[in-house]
Length: 245
Image (cartoon, rainbow, N blue to C red; front, side, top):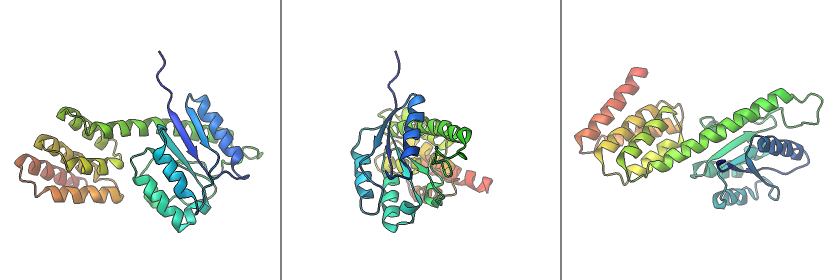
């Protein structure tokens, strides 16, 4: 029996300059065995990006591909909406087009770079490079979904499952794991699980991003925990960080 297809929703600025690119993107991902739904009705602009984000949050798609243009990224309002989208629990993969600059806040996430590859009708269009980015995108989709599945396991009723999920998220240095572990810590009562959460945060703190800084702060806050087991986990994690610096 075939496994269920992954459903991807593509939100994008539907304009004459990029609709050919979106069509090729949709066709290429469909050939890779994905179920693609394209949001053709909304335009990514300062006025209605919030509508796209709300649509993403309400949608039942497995993963969300947000095609970003230079104009969208230069808008202060759009940037705030994008930051909000990236902080949700939805798995979102940005696709960068045009000659836009990639925001530092997104460099720690998986993204694909289609800059210079948005005009399939051009004689200078690099088919091989486009296909390589498609393969990279498909791998990223599968990896991102796997990471989000692990995040959901952090709330499993079995302590050993929560520990294993934290270990795997840390090994992959998945940025969103920091927020997920922090959220779970608010209701976690098992000191052995918290010990391993601290160890995971030690590895996530290696990220040279805001998430890495947040992981360090969470570790320092855990130092006030009364459990000797937790204190040992925090100490081990901080010593690990000290060794690699």
